[in-house]
Image (cartoon, rainbow, N blue to C red; front, side):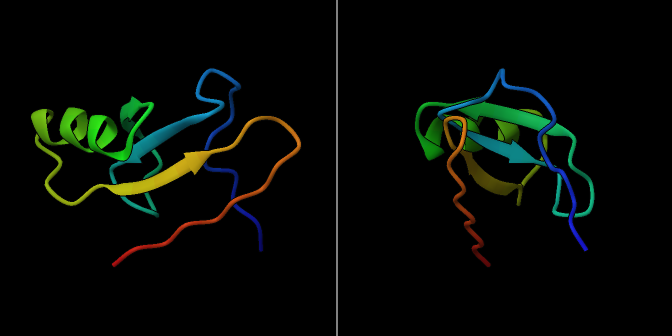
Length: 65
């Protein structure tokens, strides 16, 4: 089963923080993981799901727990 987490090219080449792996609401984004995480935490999401959105035609999958 596949799940599309980011359905826009707006975040290509950036780190994106989401509410969770199940709730893909984007709550932070930035050129570094710290930028994305800080933005999410300022919005009250203490443990966001972080991923890197690669430039077009590249696939990277990151999972941290």
